[in-house]
Amino acid sequence: MQWFFMSRLTRYLLGQYARDAAALFAVAAILVWLIQMLRLFDLVTAKGQGLLTLAGQAFLTTPPLTRELLFICMAIGLSRGLQRLQDSRELHSIHIMQRTSKIWTALAVYAAIGAVIVSIMAHWAVPEVKQAGREMQAQIAAELVGENIVPGRFTEVTQGVVVRIGGREPDGTITGFFADDSRNPDRHSTYFADSAVILQTDDGYQISLRDGRLQLVTEDEPFSEVEFARYELAIDSLTETGEARTELNDWNTLQLLQIRQNQANRERQVDELLFDRIADATRLIALLLCVAAVQSFPHARRGNRYMPTEVLIIGGAFVEHFSSGSAADSSVYGPFAGTLILLSFATLVLVYQLRGLIGKGRRKKARAEVPT
View 1 (cartoon, rainbow, N blue to C red):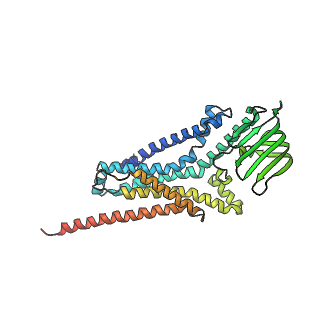
View 2: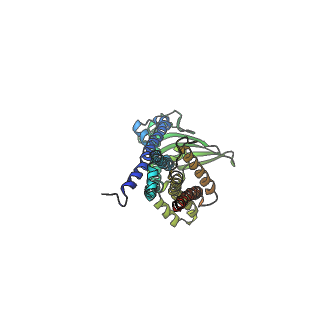
View 3: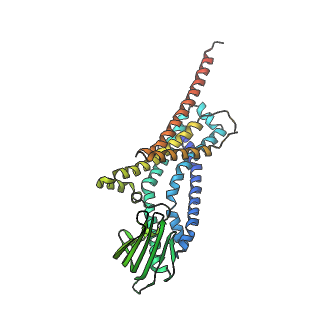
């Protein structure tokens, strides 16, 4: 039974496109996961956690990074598939038999599958994984502060955050709590408290500080101190590393639409995030169209390519990212700027390719009509 409407040739071409893309993406995802394992190794093991926790946290940080690699892997897979067809002269046969529509049908199915995968990652998977990663990170920090920190010893919870406790009561209450946060060069915070209790609330893990003071050093205020009877300190505010937390970034698209409906003052922020996520699918389609425009037409050249197409694809991806990132600062539609550049390039190449083919067809027809 045929897959939906696809002919055998379309399925064959789709397999040629997808084979290398799947292999490249699998290798890229594994490499990213291993790199994250190495990056987090000292940080996680220093907190008294095992290899399973390390592997889990590395896995949760992988999807946001592989999301950026997926459309490059799919473009390279398409390029290699078309190059194999070119080298084996199958591409010539397809054009001679006037079955080029199968090439574009396979490309359309390939692009649609990629767009669906990218959209699922951007709109749902990556935000959910980010939330799960932050919850795991906060849980690790809560266990570290509540159970694993040696009383009387200064312990670096994460780079730039040092915590010290005086001791622990039988009921889990921490005495003599001290924390120094120097991650932000514009804001240095120091917390002192006679006692502290770790709580798990709907908003995550928190350290409830009792009878203490907060010292701040900022650019505007050389030094200020505030005394408090009770202060709720979110643990994830002491443990975040790398990407600074953006609250809206943690929500999936359905949640963002609800926020946009209920909070009018956040409409622009939500629109920027939504357009950025939608642009993932459009940039994938545009990049694939560029590759198809260049390589889906047969030629008589044999090897001796001046530059690997993989390098050109990566270069095009960088141009797209740079253009979209620059335009995003001035307009909510900025994320589509790079897509427009890629589509313009693809259109010009297609016009050039089709013009050449039409010209050849006319010359052959004219020669055929010349009387002998």
